[in-house]
Length: 192
Image (cartoon, rainbow, N blue to C red):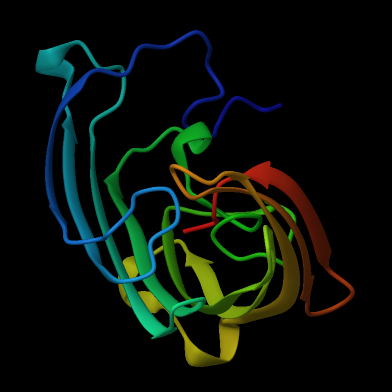
């Protein structure tokens, strides 16, 4: 309300250049059961490019899918989103929902770090389930992540194979975090 936070003065323009590198060995983009996916991102927002704010954004998303059997997979992800410079608060990454189930998207700051994993199984015809867990946190300074500040979330999800040709699932996830936090998601596709 005071207008002192970057992004409070609206409307504003963000303009920049972004480079993205992907490496994908997954066997399926909708429901991978084996392979790796890596995405590295660097974005540069400058006044010379028409941006109202000058900042840089760096992201790294590492995912691995390891088959246990024909109908079981262990999936892991490490994700970080780092901002440097004068960043409008609307661009701050949020912790919760898809990047850490068990929390609503209410934790927000300039930097985000999340690690999570899940066991996925198809148990009968088109029905399956997932057990997942993870840790994550946001921080105002990238070098200030602290082991003591990580939020933990666990949960269970149910799957219905919506489109067998593509492996597209419809998912219902119940996540449970610390201090009474919880979340529920009913969406197509996997969380990661």
